[in-house]
Amino acid sequence: MKLLQDKVALVTGAAKGIGRGIAIQFAKQGAHVAFTYLSSVEQGEALVSELEAYGVKAKGYRSDASNTKHAEELINAVAADFGRIDILVNNAGITKDNLLLRMTEEQWDDVMRINLKSIFNTTRAITKLMMKQRSGSIINITSIVGIKGNAGQTNYAASKAGMIGFTKSVALELGSRGVRCNAIAPGFIETEMTGKLNEEMVSGWVNSIPLKRTGTAEDIANACIFFASDMSSYVTGQVLPVCGGMLT
View (cartoon, rainbow, N blue to C red):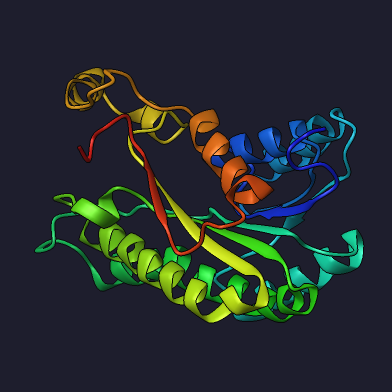
């Protein structure tokens, strides 16, 4: 039997990158997958048929989780379309890097809104549903930058560190109702975003990684499968770095 057989998962920001990888691996493990996209419309629409090829139900929703009303409507729509939601993966996020002295208020606010307010909106909206079910797994995709910091990313690091505190607090609040909340902290992962970096920069990153390679979206998805499945039924409030040893 597949690890996520007939579970219903909602993955935010899944049109590309890590989110897309998570959605595909969930479908391979038998989960029905709802996902969101915003600007990447064609990629989002194409993902539906790719997921359905694994014999599961799939549906994409064009939604902005940083908008409170949109987030509430999203949760209600997914619950109506799929009957329940067993897994929520808060993956949507952006970067707007700059040195602190040059960072604009807009760059700070945009990153906080998309990265941090989004998980507040979706998690709050799904809480009553999961409490009523007396089951559920919430997985927040943070970053090792939220643990160790990174020059030129004060906004991103602060948002990802906030996600960690949020994760632990939600775990304490919802544990007695059978709802778990954990976080995954990716390191240097190959995505469309990192593909734009110059070769010298990538080489510098790889040399600092004990495993001497970059990670893949599948590496993050495998960790998500653990937290989403019954294998982690006694795990909540934890942060799992998936970084090739960068934090060692």
